[in-house]
Length: 226
Image (cartoon, rainbow, N blue to C red; front, side, top):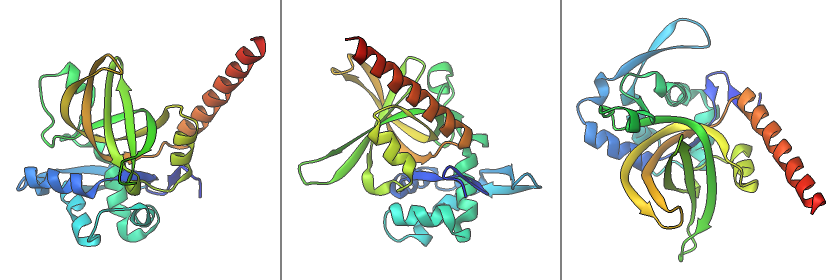
């Protein structure tokens, strides 16, 4: 099986159970009404509901870590959960991230979908806890949030994204928190919580590797000229 895709969609790279639980607390009686249709492997459509995400609390007693994400990606028990995460952007209750700047309407769920390249910056706090700061952009707008390294899959996409310090193509869902002025960036940044992050498909991965290889060649040529 390819390292980017499976029979029900692209691999789940990151998911925050605690952020999802908070969303359901805010939505409370609405989540079970939010359903949408997707096509399963090109066949007939099936109904999926946001309440399926609430089963994370039933399936996993603690926060979802890399071992649990591996199960979500490869265990048929979680097949529909994976389908939900791969297809949430099709739901009427999930707005594209562009609507944060281009529309006056707010997403009913508080979740906004992105499909863009992300820069991943790992670091440790004073207690030795490992985190990954995730930075993305939509046109001229920058958004960023902090994620726990333990909530990430061990798939090669993570290693590549961190190793090369070159924005890597991901998609996923965020919840906006606030807007802060960042002195380092010298501009206002949208601070977000990352709800889930999905790996790119085969073609996106190939394109990234091609662009990255070309970038390295150009850098090498510049160095040789110096």
